[in-house]
Image: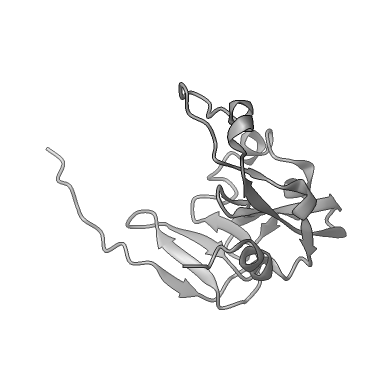
Length: 160
């Protein structure tokens, strides 16, 4: 009979292997693997996303071309992809642009859905439940590739 083992699952900040900022959030996945989420560069990966261990072809089938263009392999073979942040009542941050030589972080603010329009925003799989906020495309603001944390701050990710 297998025994359950409790791992010390302590999160910490570390130097990012991709961009060398000190804002890389490291989260244990299990006893042997970590996940990496960097607020400095806006990219993420895990120890499981390495060449030979992960099916990148299948994973990338649904990714936008820009994500594939921007992917980065670090010196340990981990493959990093850009992040999308979607905080339903604050806004969204995502990579935007025609290609790796001309892109940035887009930040758009959320706005409340007017009561008379809520029927237009049903929550999939939920009966009579609707989203309370939508993204305001007119509020879109662009940030440079090295300004991910500023884009997050713009939509209020760090507000208490």
